[in-house]
Length: 416
Image (cartoon, rainbow, N blue to C red; front, side):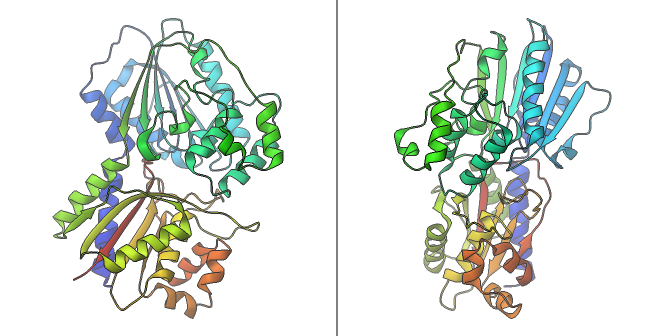
């Protein structure tokens, strides 16, 4: 494939990201909704898109905000450009929660307690919230939480199953934050990074009252030691009543729509797929390879959130890199193709917090390039080391924090 083709896919990907940028999404919401300013307003933003969403709120509401607390991933606070405002920024661990995640949880509850009885809250919640802020029951400490999270990240469980476990082990998830509002009103603006855009799943549903016991189907999938934690950490909280208005301001369909517009502007026929690419990464890669081998020419766009069962020793890269390399391995025939798989937030969901690649763009030459550099594709996939292979083949994508988080994007090009 030519450099022009590769640059066009990057342009389409960037357009998708810009279409769900948190700052713009929140500004659009407030531009079309009136905001009552007769009560002190407290802003609480949590997640990987928290800083950009908070910036958009400040852009629109200006001095209406009495105080703001922004909790985001390390390095993701750079979207904030706010001077002379009462603003607290806490950066914490993701995907692995750390001590700062617990500090963030303590500060969140303290701010809710400090706010006056007539305060109005604006919550801005995006993906990553589950790891970035936490308040634990006495039966679990940070080391145990991290052990549980490591198992979850490599378990291959679907996101709704993972969130069942997270909610069951938390004092604030699954609507358990609601009592701390003490009946005060809240606007809950969400950026969805989950299939189906269920508010109860986004950020583990801090302000969505729900059943917080794990289903028997989930309990049957977890090891005995985790079953024990789930049994003894049961939390029962009353006072789940408050006036909360929940609105989704950006989701994966918005990113696909923006990508479609950009691809058409570049002159491509476009096939925007509503079917969601999920499940085990190996199965998903085989599905995509089959579709690419039999698809019509043009740009093909999907949203995705695959799962990876990790080995004991984890290599370099995340699920998008694993998916892209597995597609490259599964493709057959002489047909030309190009595929980009990348996170919408600028990271690839890897278990290692210091990895900065968003994903990868592969083509029919990827496998040969990696092999010439001394890598074996099958071993790289078995060891969850796709990132090292793709670094050697020159196919990694790095964007930095995007200010968005609406699941992964897959953009493929099949020429005439």
